[in-house]
Image 1 (cartoon, rainbow, N blue to C red):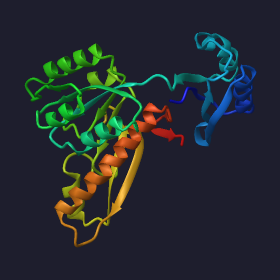
Image 2 (cartoon, rainbow, N blue to C red; image 1 turned 180 degrees about the vertical axis):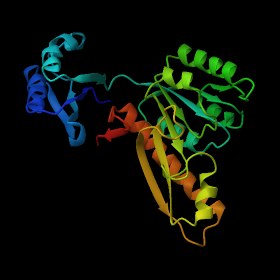
Image 3 (cartoon, rainbow, N blue to C red; image 1 turned 60 degrees about the vertical axis):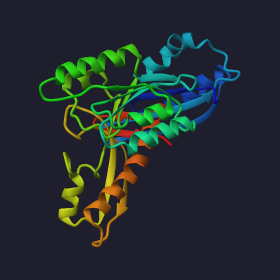
Length: 284
């Protein structure tokens, strides 16, 4: 496994930022593996991701905040340090459609997703057989308009018990309450089965079919209180013919959803995503 540290930075755009960060890593004998940056000119904002090898790095990382503080203060930085050795704890929420769940579990099992998945939560029991195959605990919590508050309380208890850092909505067909979302800011990823902002809400394939679209898509985004309105992490499309039926659109859409969601989750757990306003920067 790679043993590296990643520094994510957001600050006002100005000269000398890259040089200062690179020199800081160099002075502590760190070897930079990747360095990416983006200037959001319309906001006069600088965003940066720097990853370096910890082999030979001469610093107790517990001292990093103190030692890096002069640079952070000089450039008015908001910053976060992440270690590749830390495997984020991820909970998957699912309803009856299981294609995204199965894809995530397989990619995790094969080592493509470097995280821990300690539990799956569902409002139906249909997908439980997949959790048993991959030996992931499965919790069925039915949700209705009459018990939504109680159901979310039970879900939150499980998430706290398992120290969950990221929630993935793998076609979880329930709208989370504002209170629930506020407890996990920018840490809930949803897959929407259309190319947002087109065809928001329910039955996007039906809407697309009725409009005779030539492209369909899927969108992975962070969940906010606005329905299907959170910052977009990844999208993809497939071409549609007039010969395609509604069922064809659904099947093609499922293939897109799996790939788009897994990419978004991988980029998040690899600390490649920075948010600013309603946008994201995804560093490759």
